[in-house]
Image 1 (tube, rainbow, N blue to C red):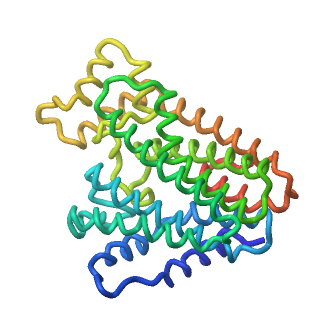
Image 2: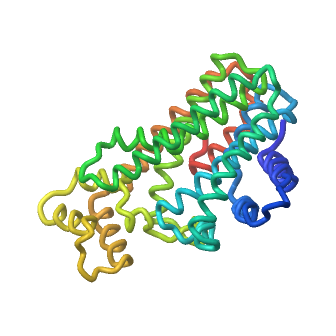
Length: 326
């Protein structure tokens, strides 16, 4: 069995050895940049880890795993444009370092690079894997659309929010892991259990990401604190706060997120919203929901028909992502 660090090294070497067209170097400079700015490589590592649970051979899964990493980074390039985010992983975002048009075009080419990497999967498995990958791509776009839609409406339910998270974040983790499991020889039942594990882990990961965006250390988190608040995003924290608040507290939240704040600067807005969150106890609510998803994820992992020893690395990775040991 491979360790997480070993699999991350495999992915990093494969990315380092990607070939780029010399005819238009400016097109690929941002691609090289975003792929070299770090990131934990969680998604491709989980593809290989899922494969490794069912097979000792992973070579045939390396480039399909890399395709998921390239696709993920492509979405980040475009998400940063839509969110007007100037920083990604403690470095300038692509559109900040170059310009909007360059970021859009370089992001576009990454989508096709991902397809090329995916096409190196074994021919017999490629049709099934491509259908999963294509569904992931469509659902991620649907999730981003819902995320943008939610910024323009006053009320979003918790169920609607979690569906958006499932589409925007969870399906990439879950679908990638299902691809890895199929590449490892898993049957349909096990592949579905792997998907369920990834889905619930992704939901937990995003809820905790919401918490970190509000209370995390920017030096460790890689983004400025309170970015979701400034962008008026309907996170689980904000949705629950609106649900729990009333009277003057509700009016204050509505004024802060309405865009009619007069001379209130972003830092003041963030600090005031966080103060309200703490008064209402929404952090504890979000942490409870995250723990529920983690429990469900582990239940799905228990259902796999492989020896417990082959699940250890996956459990270790899940624990590091969620901060909760098995």
